[in-house]
Amino acid sequence: MPADNPETPKKLEPFRTPKGVHDILPADHDFHTYIKKVVRHRARQAGFRRISTPMFEYTDAFARSIGDASDIVSKEMYTFEDKKGRSLTLKPEGTAGVARSYIQHGMQQLPQPVLVYYYEPHFRYDRPQKGRFRQFWQFGFEMIGETDPALDAQIIQLANKIHKDLGIADMFSLQLNTIGTPEARKKYMQVLEDYYTGKERSLCEDCQYRLKKNPMRLLDCKAEDCQILAELAPKMSDYLDKESIKFHEDLKGYLDEMGIEYTENDRLVRGLDYYTKTVFEFWDKTEGAQNAIGGGGRYDGLIELMGGQPTPAVGYAAGVERIIANMKKEKIRVPCKDELHVFVAQLGDEAKKKCLVLIDELRDVGLKTMGALGKGSINIQLRLADKFDAPYAVIIGLTEVREGVAIIRNMEKGVQEKVEMKKVAARLIKLIGEENLDQYHPGELLYG
Ligand code: HAM
Image 1 (cartoon, rainbow, N blue to C red):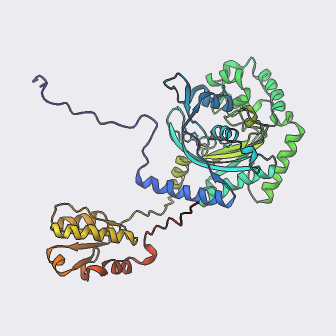
Image 2 (tube, rainbow, N blue to C red):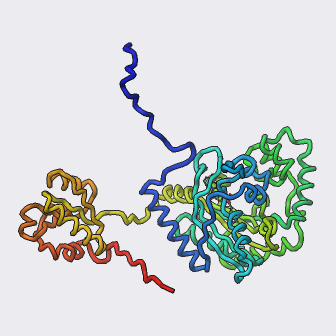
Image 3 (cartoon, rainbow, N blue to C red):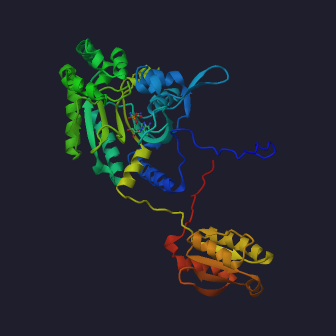
């Protein structure tokens, strides 16, 4: 074998995305655009306004709110130190940041409830698998400052509406439970701890740890042996306080009134510690808890826990990648607004100058126009127009420049017409149809 020539540069290994994260390519952006539009539309109808909290917060903001013993905090956070040694964490979920923001900006002074929604990327260092990524998008809604089961009902209805708009509502079942007040839960957790003591060896490794920190999490573990034990465990419903029972009965009454179906699931706990009373999740009808598309609940103690006044709240968040996967599974397509209308081909320097002006004019009237304007022959450029699926091409060569005209070619039929340069835009609008133009009206700017 000849020795490697040190003069020959080695072919560099191309970079790839880190494990568990993905590019959103243009075809998937069509889904994101559509989903964002539905979320914005439904949110606005219900009086919600958009909020964005930073990509990272002080680690304690998440640790204290989501809970030290939760899977998220104990093993899934992207935590790093900044140059001054402060511990920061990429946000694993949206509620903690919104609660922090509510307190920081004195939102308790605003008319209550404060209604906000978000559409953001989140980060969890989870084992990547189907529907589980290390960067994923969530949209979510939070209603802060009012306690009434009618709000819980409205949040659930809003989630339901959005799932319907996206064509996937029938694939999911709403699982509903109440986990009561913190006091009732404390009592119940003691009962659970007693029940599990002596059975530790039958539990999965995670549950052996959870038993010490939050025994309720043992109830919704997916491991087979843990599920058998969970089925025989004492029921939360036997330890609930009167207030939570009444709250839950009222909520169910409202859901019935609105015709929203739900399954009562007394083992639904949710993986975040801040919940009180209502908890719910939308489960895949075939896969169950695995790959839930969304979940939420009431968190009446969170704002106080984060240093604010006692403030009740309820919210919901859904995973966008999982929604898109389910839309694709149902063969749902979304409109793509990116298809070109016109490809401009030219030959010669003078023609190129005319084309630059014409392209600008066509785009301004709303015709989606591309001009590669390279050096190839007209034929090569027309082949390119075909590859880009442009229905029309505009051709300008030396003769056309001299005569002040352009050729408009119907790419499918292969027929051409000569049109006066200043009438090209109007003719193309006619051919494409005014209703199909991509016109942008940013609206009026207001001053002062
Ligand atoms: P969560 O159940 O942790 O709730 O997340 C909500 C949804 O985000 C999940 O149902 C799932 O669709 C998606 N999701 C979570 N982790 C991943 C992942 N690693 N990869 C892909 N998708 C994922 C919350 O985050 C709460 N903040 C919801 C809430 C809002 N509660 C009250 N207000």
